[in-house]
Length: 148
Image 1 (spheres, rainbow, N blue to C red):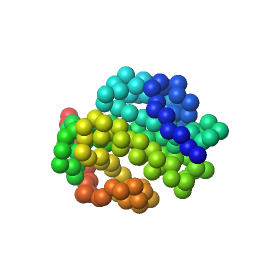
Image 2 (cartoon, rainbow, N blue to C red; image 1 turned 120 degrees about the vertical axis):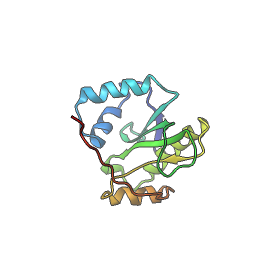
Image 3 (tube, helix red, strand yellow; image 1 turned 30 degrees about the vertical axis):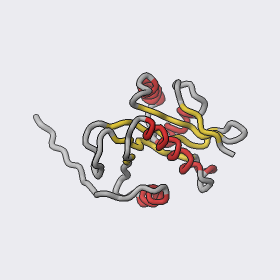
Image 4 (cartoon, rainbow, N blue to C red; image 1 turned 180 degrees about the horizontal axis):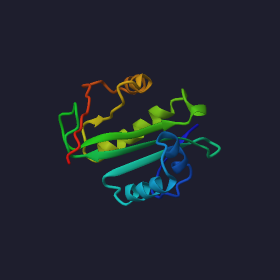
């Protein structure tokens, strides 16, 4: 049986390791961002799932976004910034438990919608979102132009 615990410190067991598996980046960058997330608990929430043996199984990170979020009708919106379950713990309902925990936090903040995104070619993420109750709202291609 898994238990879900909020992350309130960058030293939270397993949080850094799960983040690095989801978003490969420099350890110092992660730790700095984790500190910033913990410093604003009214805007950011993050949770880690642990096995009965205390092994970190997965994480979810959610934020409140007040800017326009594609496909939504309200503001602020809870935004699923990251969801990751370690490969050996997949297909056990852990992602659903993590998203339900994030959803409860988002509702406690007064939101009526939760949104997320995925790259166009990440079809496994699309399937996971649908399985967790999300509906696709639109597809977008972003552009940029460097200004000299």
